[in-house]
Length: 254
Image (cartoon, rainbow, N blue to C red; front, top):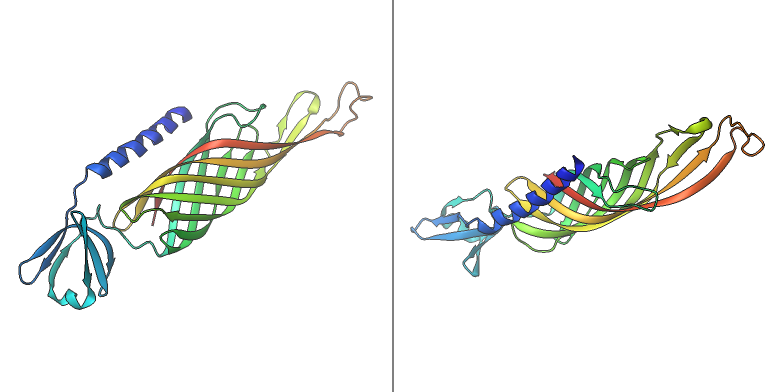
């Protein structure tokens, strides 16, 4: 099921990109004298200025010219909203690929909520938390994020860098002879690129990246038939693991 979900996410990314490329500009600025501009509004600060792309040219309308404007017709799918300010985003995704020699290639879910502030189109910072699962450990990631749009368009490529700590939630697996395995979290890092699809008041994102999660696996034995070799409760070994997987995300932001 998770494999099919990953395929659907990739299909959605391709479909959204195709939709964006096929959409035609519909923004209209009508002036009192009957003239008008038809194109795509890329910047708009009410009362100060706006910029509209007409063909291959960009036309800037200053604040003093606003009194000569009769009407501004925004196409809500073409409107570019200034990214400066606070943003909030919910993300869902999967991690795929073999983490290490001890793991399988099954897909595991990834859910996160993020909030931050965009200082500039290219630079924004924020904090995030969520839930992540692996074959033998559940993780609650708490991290800082750095991100930014690489272009000023309605469909804009973006980058992200996440770094923080994943809190391990013990599954408490029990094996033969009372053996108990516990897992602890560790440092996490993720980076990737994606596409942001800007709507008038919200935006959608799709992204692909690389995720690394450190963890520690600790095993103990309980009552064992051969106590001379494994005394009850003795820690047998502690193993440090690094889960390195490809991640695919989709999100909605405000």
